[in-house]
Amino acid sequence: MIKKFIYITFLLFCANVLTAQKIKLLNGNVYLNNEVIMKYERRNFNSELKLFSLDTNEEIADFVEYSSRIHINGGFKKLYFTKQNFKIESTRLKSRGWKYTIKVLLEENVISSKGKIVPKNFKRFSDKYHENLNEMIDVIQTPNCN
Image (cartoon, rainbow, N blue to C red; front, side, top):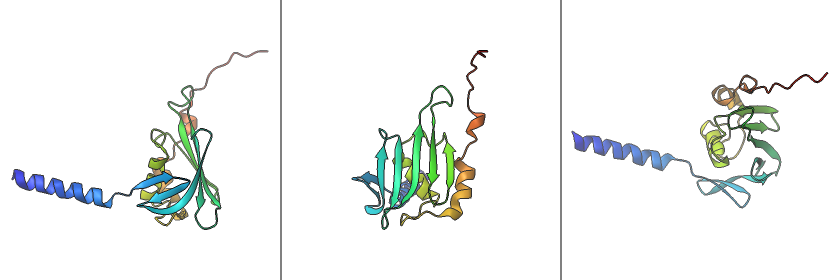
């Protein structure tokens, strides 16, 4: 019985490792399983990431990380898809780096494995990750100076 359990656990672990997507951000290129799918540019001390299409060099997305201990606990990430004029703000994506954010977008098929934006999956992704940050903001009361 224990041998079967160990064997099944090992098989599940191997299947997970073999199907995992490997993302690399290297020399201005986004790699998925060692294949270039997009270009990127980091700005503002790594707090902003712009994604560009591989074939036309057109900006397809602009991601910004906001760090704020005063208003929203730990900050948030804003993901803006340029052509589609679609924006998501999330504290759930804030805690990890840009590689993780791109991996989540690939897993949710918002970005295809060829590096193309898939707008039909925006709604599902938004339902899962978008948060109403206005409800989370701790408003600092300032005295009325009349």
